Length: 329
Image (tube, rainbow, N blue to C red; front, side):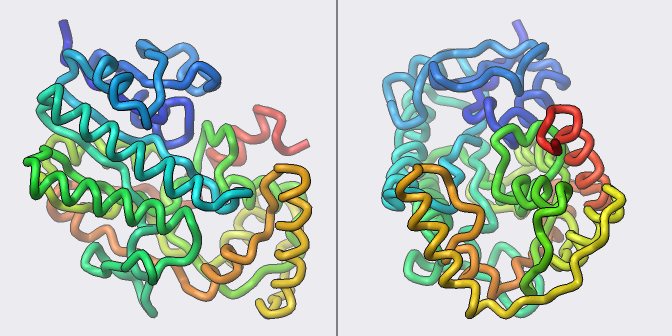
């Protein structure tokens, strides 16, 4: 019997990439999914689905029985919710229940997926030492990732939880099924629905490189350490121009100031509260855009041997997958 690895979040974008990478390595991969979750992202893979919820410690303990490794990739990844507190509760409860189960089951090593969202952005690319506070982060999602990460750190220190923390930057590529907020930007830009932009930037990385980073963290990551799994720092203007070039469209050239966009964001959020459909533009996203979310993966390169391909390859793979799956109509 091969070693068993349990993965949460495998119905989603990063989780399915991690599950696939583990299957390719020859592990027996068990994936925890809610009964309602789509299995499209693991279709055709040798994964063993187990029904459960990351917030339910009993379900997590049952799913983890006999597992040697645990990858907690699942998260409530929304930049907007009718009740923002729901995002925070889900991600904290998910971390508490799943790490509690890992301690009970005596898992040999845990790879916990945090996010650069928990870090404090700076004027230039920042590293893992740029720590933020719950008061300093913008928006419920970032706050939820920070609070959950602190809980994992507490358990590492107080309960000897054998966990390594990884912080992906902004993944792009195939199987962005939902899609993520960044995937939505790619789809909207590829279909000509983003005529202008604000002056901001982000660190973009191929989702399969993030998955390989998780495996490297399992192999070489030191318990208690945090590793940024990033790619290239790119301005939004350049990203949109690259999408335009890859889809034979004209790149947007209008740079907008942020202030006049806030009433539009508030209006979009008002409509979203009525419809329940996540708005494309939010006030939190505008506040976040004041910062260039640039990050350094030097520690992961140095200590884990992590590498990432050029970000444009991720864009090409994302566009190819979105086109093949009917998102670009």
